[in-house]
Length: 183
Ligand SMILES: [Cu+2]
Image 1 (cartoon, rainbow, N blue to C red):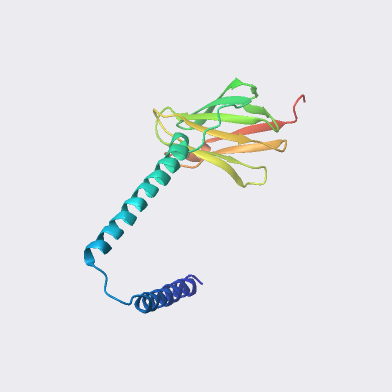
Image 2 (cartoon, rainbow, N blue to C red):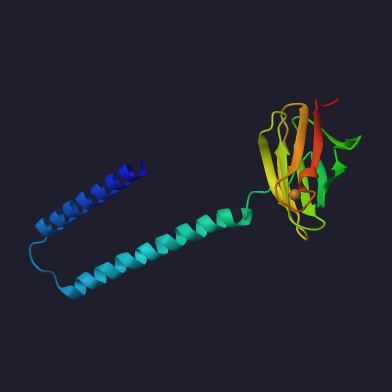
């Protein structure tokens, strides 16, 4: 499929080149003065340069402030997450509680997980009730990753470590209980 597409692009390009060459050779009647041609080309070239500069400045101006990715700064719920060998420490900061070791969150609210690690690299992965991964980020020592997620449906979600971090890696899980607000 990809090679068919590539061949098509090549064919279109080749035909276009032949057509352009034919057009140019039929258009030109008398040989032009090389100096004036050079000047004309230089003028067009500098025009293209400033046009390109303008487009690039515009593009970088709009995208660089959001790098490396768009960060939403207005979460309803904030949870600090620390990965440790070999468990997750979940600390509710705003709008969440801990109940028997489970993190309890309201459904339909924007949750910010501030994820870091106390020792080695871990992977903070959130899974749905039926085992599908919903979102994830790295838990790295000395650095905090901000993960924004909204749990639409109430239910029991699971956190698994997604980075093999040692002998107790398989024990690194936690539960997130999402409830309808007010329940
Ligand atoms: Cu791990």
